Amino acid sequence: MSMPPDDRSFRREMAAAYRSGWHFIDLVSAVPEGDEPLTVTLFGEPILVVRDEEDGVRAYRALRRPRGAPQPVRCAIRYGMVFVNLDQRDHHPVETELLTATPRSA
Image (tube, rainbow, N blue to C red; front, side):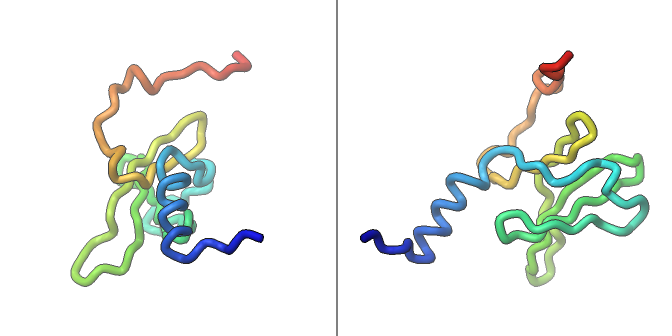
């Protein structure tokens, strides 16, 4: 009989397996206009998705920090869907020509 993992092992596995990579949040049309954010929980972390002044979409971790603002996370829009990447190690500039893609059904 196997023992359930302790809390520390579980958190380490969650960080390694699920936080790296891009994760679907919602459709762009679900992000409200104006100052109201779309609030979702991803792997136990609250994420705020907002529109900026140019009608772009941005995402932030809504962590409670003393004297700190929400931490920005990478956010991408593909085919009208919002994706975020929570992995801090993966935050590096990406060439825009690498991001263009054609749907497989095309």
